Every structure is written in structure tokens, then in C-alpha cells.
Amino acid sequence: MPQNTRFPEGFLWGGALAANQCEGAAQEDGKGFSTADALTHGVFGEPEVPPKGFYLKREAVDFYHRYKEDIALFAEMGFQVLRISISWSRIFPNGDDKEPNEKGLAFYDQVIGELLSHGIQPLVTLSHYEMPLHLAEAYGGWASRKVIDLFVRYAETVFRRYRDKVTYWLTFNEINMMLHAPFNGGGIRGKAEEVDKSLLYQAIHHQLVASALVTRLGHEINPDFRIGCMIAGSPMYPLTCSPDDVLEAMQKDRQSLFFGDVHARGSYPAYMKRYFEEHQIHVEFAEGDEEILKNTVDFISFSYYMSYCATADEEKNILSRGNIMSAVKNPYLSESEWGWQIDPKGLRIILNQFYDRYQLPLFIVENGLGAKDVLVEDEAGEKTVEDDYRIAYLSAHLKQVAEAIRDGVKVLGYTAWGCLDLVANTSNQMSKRYGFIYVDRGDDGSGTMERYRKKSFGWYQKVIASNGESLAEDL
Ligand code: BGP
Image (cartoon, rainbow, N blue to C red; front, side, top):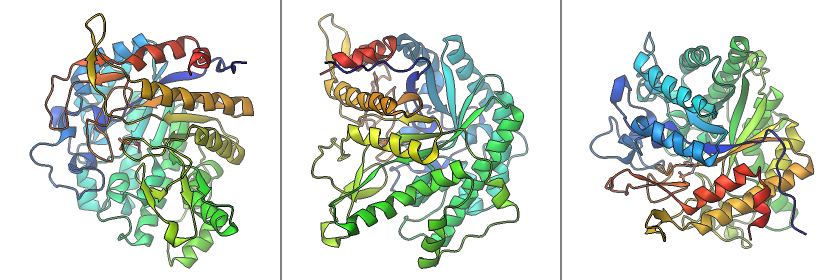
């Protein structure tokens, strides 16, 4: 019997982008450089300040000038939601400017207006892996408490501006990734393993406080706002049933769950006290922080690309480099061309884990397969990509979402990552593509920037039109 894969009425289908990976126009209309601009060699490279010469994100896929054409294609696919991010350094070029940059706001007025005119609702991330570069250089990024106020001012500017246009907001993209890539996540120099842990957790604390403050502020500005946190969701499996491995998996899981716990429960979980003590980590709470953290989120959003394994046995620690963090390879799973292990059931597992833990609605705001695509001509002479591998990946994951919904999990929607090809975050490549829409641009910046519909474009269009029912026909 084919499984019933029809999704609940009102489920939001769409795609996800991030400003720094798609917009380009790095210095246009008054925009200041952001930390993302400075990572000219990808997320694990040293920041280049100021960024010089050629780097892919300087132009990215030129969404800044082509957003109308791109949004029309999203509308053609039937998108009901588009996750975008606002580039903080377009609005406050240095981060500590007195007045916002009107031209930067005008750009988002147009993008949001265009989306709404197509019946697509924007889901807006306030900080997707970038902050004004000046704040990283002059303040030491999120390690400085002063950045909290500057972020709140930026958030207030856009909350008021889009008060009646945007309902869903996210505070920090993959907030738990600051632990693994501190400059990418928090404008803090140095490799994760070298940065002082107290400084790192202090910066994380500042983001958690900032997240709670803007959640409160957003609700004051418009009580109908739905404000969520965003976590890189990667379930941790014990490599074996040895209690040592099970315990290790639990501890590793908690490194990420800590962020959801604070956002959803409004305080630091008890297990962090022991963790901080054992690692000689000291986090300074300012007066009032405990109260501020009680402003909890309306929903939990997360990205899901892969699961990981944990083992207490050091010799078995063959690391699989994944979505920024690394962990032990799972022998039961295959992997992408970039070594990211493919585990559709992991999505059902993490949906259940989050829902059991928080009892809050969930939003899957990133999921997808980064792959090398080849542009070919179809029978009608149209250029396309025969990306059956992407269809298989997405279909298998969405079927697991349907399963989780049958388990009773409340899922608000699904935005496929990089619905338009864009610059990869970890590797800074164009050739690692996720989209339903191919962008003619190479790793060396060559290409026409033309857009082409891939085979997955028509497939996703059908999935949306049938509210998931057509998934049952996929092999
Ligand atoms: C997440 C980020 C995205 C995106 C995605 C895919 O970590 O939130 O910005 O890039 O992963 O990663 P990559 O682009 O490295 O393939």
C-alpha cells in the first residue's frame, strides 16, 4: 500500500536563501563589509580584512539585481514561503552607525514587496552567518556585550519597517555553530579549538541574551509576530550499544540541545553547570540576564543535513567533516560528494526529539543535497540539469517528515536550502549546488549568471501542488 504523504492543510512549502550567499553587491548602495565577505576562502579560512580582489560572494549569484526574475521562478514552483536573511551591514554598514542606511532598507522593501505580490510570505533571519565586519574588528564580535544593544537596534529597525509584512522571524542562523566556527558565527578570530572557552561561551551568552531581547521586543512591536530560534540539527547516535558510547552521544547531543533548551525553556539547563565547572568555563551574567532569558521563542527552527555518531573509543574516531562540525562516520550510511552522510530517517528522529523535548511547533528551514550538477540540453533543446539524485534525496527526507507528522509532531513548514544555486558556506564554492534553479557561474567567477530550471524544479512544483501527495509516486 502506498504511504499517505499528504501534508496537513496550511503546511508552508518553500525554499531558503541567505543574503551573504546569494545577493552579491557587497559594496553597493552603502553596504559595509560583513564578516562573511571577509571569509574569502570559506568558513575555515582566516578572515581577510578588508577583503581584497576576487572572491565569489562579492557578486554571489547577483540576487541583488535579479531578485524579480528569481522570485518569479519561485512563484512558478508554487512557493508559499521564502526564507531570506537581511544583511545587517546593508542596514547599519558599520554596525554602530547612528542612522540606518535607507538604501539598504529600500532593497528589502522591494524584495519583500515582490514576494508578497506573488503570494509568498517571507521568513526572515536577522543574522545569517554575518555581522558588520567593523564590529568584529573594533569590538571583538559577540565577545563584546556592547554588540547586544547594536543588534537590538538593528532588529528594532527592521521589525518596525516590516511590522505588517513579515510574520515569521528567526534570530541567529545555526546559533550552535559558533562553537565550531567562531568567526562565521560570532565574528571571533581564531580556530574553535584555540579560542578560550570562557570567551566563546560568553559570546554565546551574549547572542542568547540578544535573541531573548529581540523576541520580547518583536512581540511588543507586533504580538502576531512568530519568532523562532534556529539550530543546526544533527542527531547524535551512539556508535555501539556500549553504555560509554551512549553516554558520549548524550553529552555531544547536549552541546547543541543547550541552545534549544535556553530558547525554549528560558534558562540554562542544569547539566551546563557541571560542564562549565569541569572545563573551567566562567560565564558572566549581567544583572537582569536571567529575567531576559525567560522571553522564550514561539517555535523552533532547524537545518538538517546529516546525523553523526559518537564513540568513547578514541581509536574509532574517524571523523566525517560535515556541516561545519565533525563527528564519527556511520558505517550504515552513504555520503554526498562532500562527505556529508545521507540519513533521511535522522530527520524523523530529530523532529521527534525536538518535539518531545520542547512541545513547540517546528520549522525545517534548511535541508538539501549539495552536488555537482551538469548542464545538458533536454529534448526540446532547453538547458537543464537531470538531477535525479537531488529528487531522490529530497523525496526520501520529505517522506520522513510525513512520518514524523503521523507521529504527532507539529511541523509548520519546509524550506529547501539553496533553492536557487548560491555560494556554499563551508567551502565557498559555486560547484556545490543545492538549487532547483541552476545559475551559470563557476568557482572562478566565470559564466553568464543565467538561470535554468533543473529537473527537480518540476518535481518540487508537483510536490507543492499536491501538498506532498505526489511523493508517494516517487521510488
Ligand atoms: C548551513 C548554513 C547555510 C548553508 C548550508 C549548506 O550551515 O546555514 O548557510 O550554507 O549549511 O552548507 P554549505 O553551503 O557549506 O554546503
